[in-house]
Image (cartoon, rainbow over all chains, first blue to last red):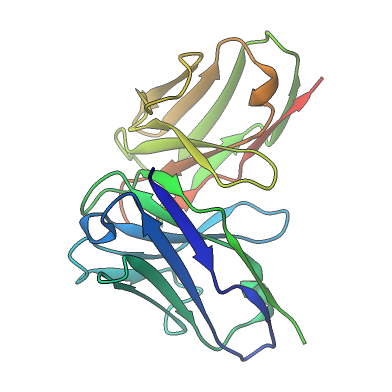
Length: 121
Length: 107
């Protein structure tokens, strides 16, 4: 069964750091474009980051550029999101998601259950 | 960036109703348009890809249409499990942008 399982969320103070993980099972993560999407409480969906299937292409949305870094470990079949200099408005549920194929596919056909990040003092 | 405008933001309907949700892009995106369903507390689920492609496993009462800047998601006969929030998303380029969502509620 194709599955994504996020972990690493929690409560962090403004200015702090957190690393999210997304463990993939049932497929090889490095064969797909992978995404992070977030959803602030009661709000809509917002794209955060992507990494291409070859691992060489990465992109981040303007609100997180320079603070967040997406990466993956193919040996662990796991996707990561390193989040630094966290701000109150980064509070959200963070989902990892898989595109339907390799670059430049942007149809997100498999999603994890999400992990909540709360930035607050 | 391409902006996506969904309408309405919410609607009330009854089981068996035909429901239509629209999504407009700020510039042409050809058919690079996806639709997702999100139930409360759950992850989004891909329903329609590339404007009109029914995702595997999705009931045929869901359909999508449109090209260029104007798109439509139709539920032909609303079922109890369809009360949820629906989002469009363009897949034309980066950054990916989602519409603001349409909440389908019980009338």
